[in-house]
Length: 153
Image (cartoon, rainbow, N blue to C red):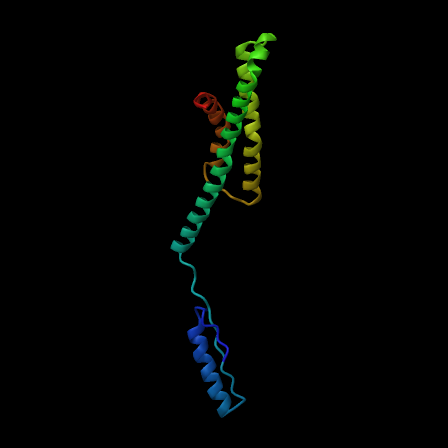
């Protein structure tokens, strides 16, 4: 007898196969069929699945957004090694214009991955409350913080 014992409904199906085999020996015209209907999924399990999915989303997005300051710091360190700021100051660029232009361009560059994440959220219908606001405020917060902490490198 071929019975899938890994299924959750294998016990009733096993007994159904036994009864059907007995009835076929007695009278081949008798049919004995079973119908199974699964229990509904409890709200507790649905909410647990939703929490797991939101945790996965948070981890993946945070890993992606954590790479942005790394790129900014690497570029700032490269500028310091090549003394780009010094060459621009000698050429007549003011310090405030240099820093403001770098700050604005880095914020604009940060909005590219944020826009991509927001687009994917829309495409996959991921509607987590408050995520859009946090993602839109992230570049404005992380770029100045990265500039301040870049002196540690």
